Image (cartoon, rainbow, N blue to C red):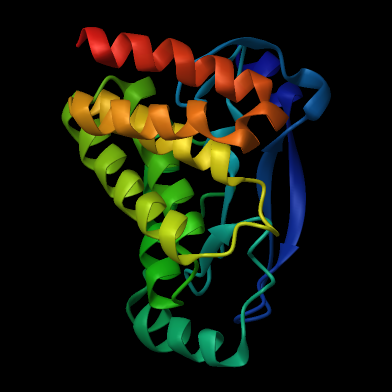
Length: 225
């Protein structure tokens, strides 16, 4: 099993943009991914290692943590903020080996905290919080899953009303659906129905028929709840 896991992973070399430290971090080989199923809030299950455990890069020297696609997009002011608020208290440690679920949760919590320090978009923060909720679900920690589902929902809802989604991977229909599903999972059927209804009745939903179909199914489920 351990040999199989190591075959699924590879080392990616990274240079920290904050302190210039060179280090390596694990990633899952794309060819190794075998999707088994996906939850209604898009948590994917794979045969073998789940790549969501390795989405966050963490510098072992200074503690700078962010998603791979955000990692180098840090301003000079942001670097100083990380040095002052994170690096000054950081106890050097590496997350560059095979990660347990708990270690993956730690890396995401770091990315969430530092993302707030850097005033990243609500959409990004919501996605990191949702990643934590997913990892808690995989771990079987229901209380912490719900805690971070709520945090994700709050960030997403704020982003829906205040942020431009045009240059993101999340359009208005998909985000509206996801907010509805998070409300449903949190036991708020009334708000879930409201969001699913907004998706289904939107003219834009026809451009994303799969999400529209999911919204109809989850609307029926929420109505029954």
